[in-house]
Image 1 (tube, rainbow, N blue to C red):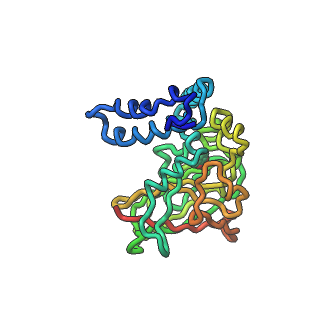
Image 2 (cartoon, rainbow, N blue to C red):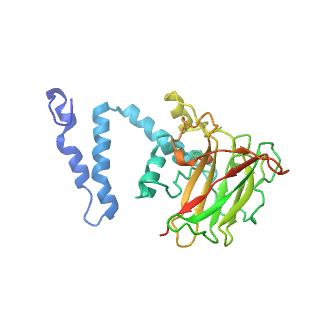
Image 3 (cartoon, rainbow, N blue to C red):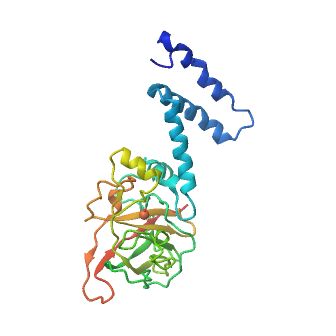
Length: 293
Ligand code: MBD
Ligand code: FE
């Protein structure tokens, strides 16, 4: 039985004009983008409810779910974002927003989702320093490479590399009272050579926070909350499109099974054992390639 009114017994509940009336309620001075989005949004939502015969009881649960997400969120917890993440929506809009036209051969650095744990104003460190503010174990890694212009291949000077990742206990610094403020975060600026290097940790796979509504949702879907080990970056430079991205450890067991669907092949990297560096047991080379605006 559908919106086309073919079922005589339910016709009145499925007035074919109902959805159009809601869409037509938008006024002539409406926000342009919203006015463009509303017809599709209302049509999909209404069709969804009709097709699934959503009840008042179920709809109330969805209201409560959204309210719970809001109540749970503050500057350290972004439950709304987590919810969209487990539905793959942040990954989808990331790709829609940042996809690059050129699809053959070598590509500029691919984007990946920001996630809920970036913080502004991470400490600025000189090249070669470490983001590790407290010894909590883990595999110290010397990460290095270059930031170049994808088209010309020329080094980019004064590019900002903003990095953040979890501690070996699987927690970001703001989730964990035992970690110093801004632990495992930092910003680095490239010199004329465009080269960078710093010390960080080989990341650990970890569960997205699952003690809230997003976690309940995962459980109801018989899904796990794990993300493969990853390091987050924002690479930005004057005259270039900023790249929000993540890199992933090829050895990670969750690589093909990310709870927020963010893994892309070109972002999978190899941590190599490193000899002769008393500070680091692993070496990681990764080159960032930016596209001019
Ligand atoms: C994370 O650490 C993350 O990076 C993303 C994208 C979503 C949830 C938790
Ligand atoms: Fe993350």
